[in-house]
Length: 231
Image 1 (cartoon, rainbow, N blue to C red):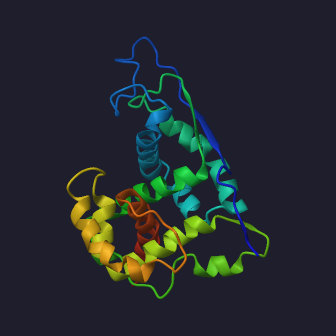
Image 2: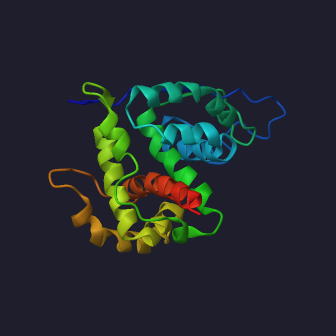
């Protein structure tokens, strides 16, 4: 039996440098104020966007692992340096504060950031190809008994893969939409009718725009990559 990984596993601690007197302001300039523990989601979005843009190799390595595994833990540990580079961006001042991200919190946001970067080439849903099984299926089958695994997150990705398979255009729209703005509503309306066929009986998944965005992002990343490799 594969064991469920602890929710707080693989914490990544990042310290942002204290700004100098020459700084224009001692605040998180891109979120409009000094970042605190209550701004974790906004901070995470900005940091993972930087990772996808400037540290794409390590970002892809993280997404190529199964969530909650020892392999993911090792890659996350190696990502502390690249994360620190993004946190110390002069455009994003945290006033010397230390933030701690867990892999369970970082990974979904990173999936969205990488998917958005791939989709920036304008091909959109046309570049997302069909697949007969989720991207992680073979790797999951190879996980030895007793190994650590985040099965709730895999269940989320499995649902997302099904949604991408049934309506890739809606999934792409949702990933590219901004939280709290008009674009995510039409995308949600495209995907929600498919939920009865994509949520496995007995699973409990809170359906929100953010949850669905996280769910479909990684499947898009893996299907997009396969599409690029197709002659």
